[in-house]
Length: 174
Image 1 (cartoon, one colour):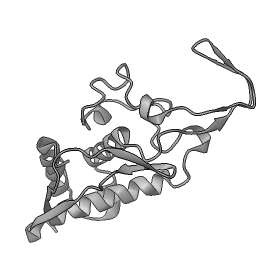
Image 2 (cartoon, one colour):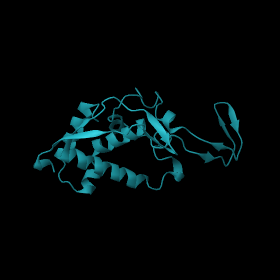
Image 3 (tube, helix red, strand yellow):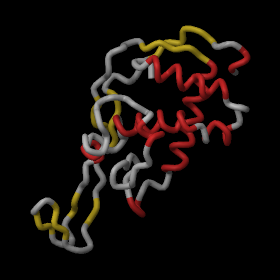
C-alpha cells in the first residue's frame, strides 16, 4: 500500500467513511477486501497446491495417470495475463470489477480441499489492516519491494516489511 499512494488514500477514505468500527462492518468493506485479495494474488503465502489424481488427466498434451501427484502453481495462475491483465501491477480494482473462479484465484488452495482457515485468515487480515490504518500513519523503511523467499512450505519477504509509525491519526479515526 505504501508503494501505491492512490490505493492507500482510497482505502483510508473507505475506512473513514464506514458507519461504525464494528468488526462485522469492517469485514464487509469492498475495497478493503479487494486490497487484501490483490495482496494475496501477488504474494500468495503458499505457491503451489499438491493433489493426487484420482483419475487420469491430460494437460496440454501430457497424459498423467491416476495416482500421480500434481502441483498447480498458484503463483503462475495468479499471473496469467489473460485472466489478470497487467499481472505484475498492484490493482485491487480488478477484484471490484470481477469475481474470479476458484481455478483462477486460489490463495488458500482450491476446490473442496481449500484451507480450513481461509475465511478466518481473510477476516483477520481485514480487521488488522483496517485497525492499523485507522490508528496510525506509516512509512516504509525500505520503499523498494522485497524478494519473496520460501520458508518451509510458505513464502515471505526475505527481509520482512519494516514500517515506521510516523504519526497517530486523529481521534475521529480511532
